[in-house]
Amino acid sequence: MAATTTEEQDLEPLYDLVARFDPGDIDVPGGRARIRLNAGDAGITDALIEGGIARLVPVEGDPDAVLSAEPDVWAEISRDVRAGMAAYRAGRLRIRQNLHLGVGFLAATSGDTDPKRLRFERVRTANHDLAILSAGEGIPLICIHGLGGTKSSFLPTVSGLVPEGFRVISVDLPGFGDSHKPASGRYDAPWFAGAVIELLDELGIERANLAGNSMGGRVAIETGLLHRDRVERMVLLSPALAWLKDRGWKWLLRMPLPQLGFIQPTPRRIVEPVVRRLVPGANEGWTAAGVDEFLRSYVTSSGRYAFYESARRIYMDEPHGDDGLWTRLATMAPETMFVWGRQDQLVPISFMKHVEEALPSARHVELDCGHVPQVELPGPTNQAMSQFLRG
Image 1 (cartoon, rainbow, N blue to C red):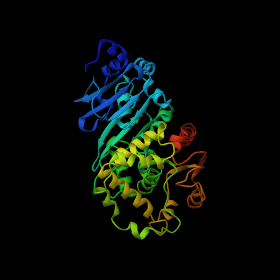
Image 2 (cartoon, one colour):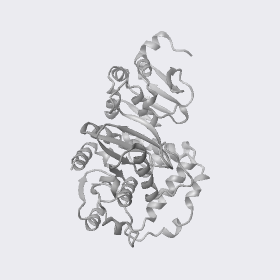
Image 3 (cartoon, rainbow, N blue to C red):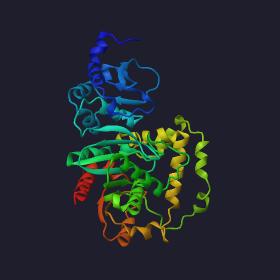
Image 4 (cartoon, rainbow, N blue to C red):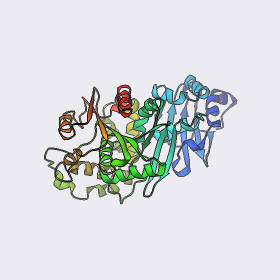
């Protein structure tokens, strides 16, 4: 049913947004997306992106992303080019199902022409098709997400460090988010590190700082070890580190179990309730959006394969010997800062003493948070990162 004149007036801020749509600031996989815009009492409509053009259309079917805010918030966003991300960070605007498209829509409809504005892009390297978000000018910082995460987990870092004079680039690693998910990928730290270097090559960045969370921290370490001439400084946020205790399931994980991901039935209606029961606060704020990001990859066969194989590689990481992580860590050249969460249940802060023994030159910051400091405590994390990266 077509919108009435009254409805059009109620939704006028959304028409203003769509009128300033810039396809260069959003990456739309497949070239088509339906974004549902919920303005509360003012009504609900869909923004259909197709052929590089966005237009408002009646609500139909299942959307790719949902943006919800009160009418006064939408009015504010339509008037102020920077209000969209500010409202999202403040929790006054909610984005669900697909942050890549949801935040990308805000970026593409901001009307901002500042060269430092937020952009969502696709970068094709020698061996990979990578989705990135970037903003800012100045000191380059490559951000690398954790297992099951995406580039969107570093949106608080973008917000905090871009005003400090950094060019922040957050990447979906191959196998995750909106990057390609090759069945031939090794999904180990050296393979991911190669993808990071290819990204630097394609972006024309000779040397960059790295920030990695969890698995992304392990990838950053490997990049610093294998390509030390390309890395300036590193911030490791609760990084995944090789187990020092005996791994009882090591024998089983030598088998090609990740191939089960290709045949495992995982309808979202069954998987989602299970995941949300397992994750504390899974229906609130950043955590809810993070679970959405995990699910939209995990319910695909290629995404499951990448997740299982990456998890297997983390578990199988050798601690000692010539190729062991803890042996090689002592040779780390880039200056490094570790950020630990006192409440972290995945990488306990007790690992810090082992890092101090293996790499005495490293700096350490302790925060009262869990496994994802840049999301849980963005203020203190950003402050520590900025001070360290500026030397």
